[in-house]
Length: 335
Image (cartoon, rainbow, N blue to C red; front, side, top):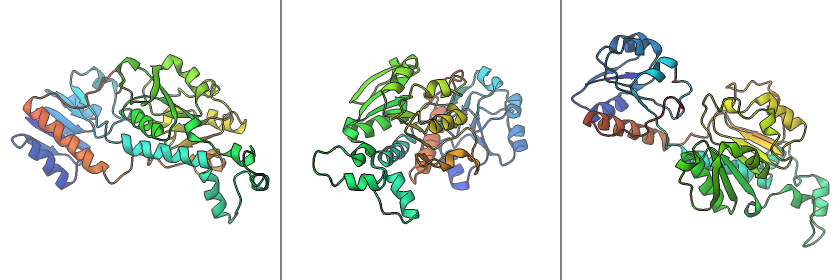
């Protein structure tokens, strides 16, 4: 049995992988040419396989991607090849869900505004002087500050993509008392957490967006979801709604989002992923006070590296023993 790793991993990770299949031949390829030369006789690739590598494969049975998302891995010859493809989904759900709730809390309590005010040395409630004055009018008065904040137990969240990440987001949102619904391409496969009102097909997306105070994109990038949130889709959101994207950047057409924000057709947006990364310094999104931008860091955490290695080691051992693999994907769907 022969394994090819590309690009090469650090020595400690390499030893951990090799220990899972000690009788196998291993190539930890630094350069593309080395990986291509190692492909004849290779049973498995751990990491990225290129078209040139696949062209030299004569007995390839399995490819283990280093990532959960596969838009940068898929190409027609790999999709058509009989090898099994697996990814590392399931590592990031809780970490990304924490970041989503961070966005939600910022918008609900105006923390994004107060952070900007701190930089400017401005001591005032969100909404300015009128909010400060009206907040002193007494109990039971609906004032500008009340309208500027959101009481989460009365708020709704629609989740687009109810996979592992979407379900973790739902669990956290439910802990804050929010009402949650979701859409998914395969709603019949979803085992939604307790408290989720409904998971329906993606044909129900317009209704979900119209219902949501917070619309959270947790879908993968596929040929079907690329450019999915264009002007027509965004038009289903209410002027009081917030859009959050921690899925993939290609799902949201940024020019259309900018137009919607400028026209006041939604209350704000939080983005961790973008059509172009890094987001250009002169992009108009930087200047919206009701937009939160983070640099594709929602999946960052000290716990991820250990989880990642454990998943790779487990699957290498399973493959070597002829056991069912974790995280097998449908190559035609990219997930």
